[in-house]
Amino acid sequence: MPRTQASDSGEQKLLDDIRAFGWHCLSVSGDAEHEPFSYTVGLFQTYGCPELLIYGLRRDTAHSVLCIAAAAAARGQPLKPDEPTDELLEGYACVVVPVPRGEYQEHFGFAIWYYEGYDFPVQQIVWPSRAGHLPWHAEATDSFRAAQPVLGQHERGA
Image (cartoon, rainbow, N blue to C red; front, side):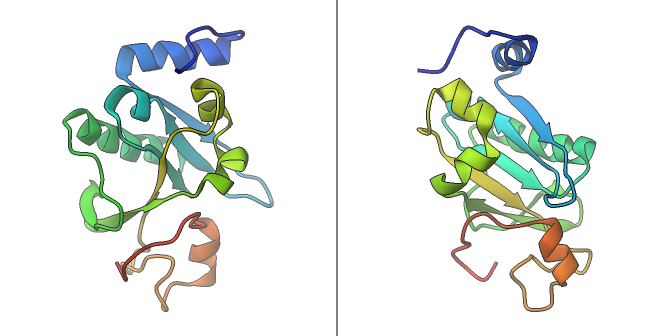
């Protein structure tokens, strides 16, 4: 059962957003060793679909992509793992990859707090380069791969 009581303003904002919108977006700033990423909290509780993470995009762009994905979940049409979708970024097909629980501690602190543990699924939205290559494509550049670490394994050659 998710938490319902907050102990500070950040936790309260998360709870208020989930009550009002069905989910909350958290953005983590990058630093010299890590790329920025954003993720959802509440999609699993509200819509029964995995929480979502996206790496390497500006905060506002990441939020926009997550809003589109959350709206699809609200319509009962959540993103499907390893199936390319062009609904998230105009002119580019993204792929969703399941995130293993071994990544949760480092990436999903507020989700772990909200769900009071690790019992929630997460998928990563993986976006292509301008050339249309996903990070695992042979022609993807090292700098592109570094900007968007893929936390899970993709199933197909998508």
